[in-house]
Length: 257
Ligand code: ATP
Ligand code: ATP
Ligand code: MG
Ligand code: MG
Ligand code: MG
Ligand code: MG
Ligand code: MG
Image (cartoon, rainbow, N blue to C red; front, top):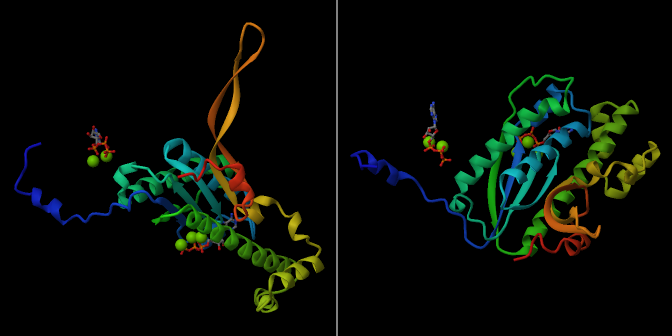
């Protein structure tokens, strides 16, 4: 295209290329979801359908953006890890952030009715997003552990809080009762209210992991009736512990350099 005299305006754009050879972590978080969840009467403390809608958005992200290797979601947020070597949009942060967050939001709106057939979408959801580069696998794992610990702390608090409300306490009484309590105290409160924390669904306690994994599939049977297998990348959704080593030993290929 021919240059015009206006072309110089391009030179005001700032470079926002992310550091090469680092894991790019993208975190998306719902904007004003406290309000949004009230308006749409999400079940407290955990609306399972809303969590599953978030998971469906994450699964769609994996279908759309092939350089994603892992993601972790809780509440109104989702963190996505891009492979270290990704050249997605030349690693330009604003391109990555804007494309992914608008895609995620559109899927959220498009799939709303699949998860809430009985509820109209009454306001327009929006999400914020940021990228952070992490130079080592250890730090990416610590990042993910940070999010999962947060999930545990919040979920334990919220479960206690809403059980106290159910038992007849006011919001401020429930807050006072929980002030300064440690994990053990909260487990004790729950126990007294007839809840065994470890019996709660894993999606609430652990959050959700969406990732690509190699699976062996039978594609056909040969003339001797023997199965012909092929390994394929499949998008998996699970609610596993990602703080300990076990998951990462079993899925060593996800965060390999
Ligand atoms: P911000 O715009 O700053 O992110 P926010 O209102 O979205 O503000 P967050 O800290 O992101 O605040 O918290 C999200 C809130 O959304 C939670 O506190 C919770 O009330 C609500 N929420 C999100 N997902 C669910 C869910 N699945 N079930 C019940 N409540 C939910
Ligand atoms: P990129 O993802 O790099 O932006 P692109 O395919 O979106 O690639 P653009 O340079 O943004 O390319 O151009 C947008 C294209 O979309 C136009 O070339 C045109 O073909 C099409 N397009 C957009 N709006 C209209 C419209 N209102 N009517 C007809 N065609 C349109
Ligand atoms: Mg936020
Ligand atoms: Mg939010
Ligand atoms: Mg949040
Ligand atoms: Mg254009
Ligand atoms: Mg375009």
